[in-house]
Length: 341
Image (cartoon, rainbow, N blue to C red; front, side):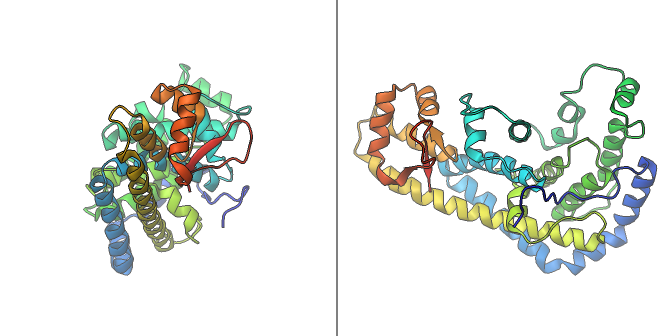
């Protein structure tokens, strides 16, 4: 289990000069080192690849259920990546804030989770290579000369542009590799070089983008953080490369299995709820409400009313028609939320 305050993003390289970091990384990611990793973890590599490909096939085959999974996994991954950094963000808060209906004062942890959520959505709507472009990495940078910005931060040696460029060069200079090993290197190198302040979570986004670029995930963005929450492995940048690569493959396998289980659960719920909607009038908003419930970990009355253009009475009547398949999850009398257990 991973508890608040226990961050598993541990790297020893954050304060080292970028030239030394790059030299050490290139030594780690030499052709012989990576070939050794591929041969040593051949079984785990095949298991991880098969699990990811199977998940991707299920996402596209299940149609609306797959679309719902993609949307739900963005929320779940955002919360998982903040948990990895030692911050527990309630998923109901993230859903409600994203919908513009916060139930409490926002926190810095919640804001960070929302940034991850928006980054995953933007990445999914663009080419994989967009994830490591300047537009993606530095879109929120203030218009200040770089030298002045570094001095203001008190980190003259921490040049984010240079570190990001070194990461890109390393990825571009890799020898021919299996896609999954390439994704593992992209993930590990991001954590070793540490290009952006507070940007360790982007390592998971980089790995997912490399998988998309290599054709392993054509229909969804892989959620590595969800796998990390289920795995016993905890990343430590000081451990040998072989151990770090093995940990990555375990995260991938666990994440893919979790995704398959989630799809199975959502598919069953869709079948049950679909039976309820069959007998309704063709103009009924019930099918649309079912799709909305499947697309989010939970919904509130305000979300349903705005998305489906319903009155509060109309939403209550539709919700009652869904029966016990959709349950109230908050236990509150006010600001109630509903979802599929």
